[in-house]
Length: 70
Length: 137
Image 1 (tube, rainbow over the protein chains, first blue to last red):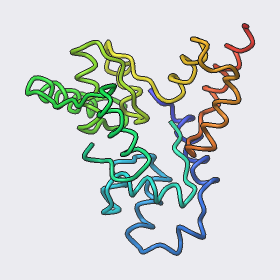
Image 2: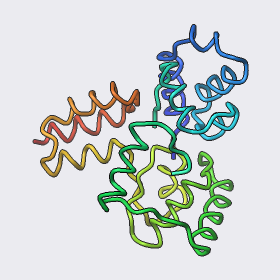
Image 3: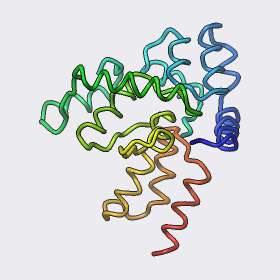
Image 4: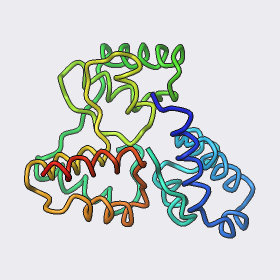
C-alpha cells in the first residue's frame, strides 16, 4: 500500500512541476479538475470532473505540465 | 479502446491490431462479476479506489495468468493489499525487465528519457531500487 509519506511525495512533485499560470487561465471546471488531480492523484475522478474523455484530459495534464507519479 | 481518442496511441493500437500482435479483450460475465467484487473489496481496505476498467484488467489477469500493465495506483497496490495472485507492472517494471533481458543498455538513461517524454516521474524508492540493481552489476 502507498504510505502517507509516498502520497505526500507524489503530491509535492505534482504541485512543483505544474504550470500554475496555465491552470489559472483555464475555465473553472477544467481548473478544478486539474487542481483536484494535483491534490489527490485520482485520475479517473479528475477526468470525470473535467467533462473530457480520458485522452483529452491526459493531454490537458501534459499542457499543464502535471506529471503522473505512481 | 473506448478511452483512446488521440494519436499516437490510437494509431499505435490500430497498427498492432492490424498486424495481429494485439487482440481486443471483451469482458465476459464471470470477469465482470470478479471485477465488481474487487472494486467492492478495495473500498473496505486502505487502498486507492479501483475503478471498473482496472478491475476488469485485474480480474482477467487473475483468470488467465496475465501480467497487468497499469499506471493506476489502486491497481498497482491491489495485489499486495488484497492479496491477489496477479502481477501488475507500471512502465518502471517494464523498462527494468527490458534492461534485465538486455533490450535496454543503460537503464538509468532510459528511465530519465521516459520521464521527460511521458512527463511521468518515478518515485525516490523506484530510483533507489534501480540504483541497487545497477550497483550489483
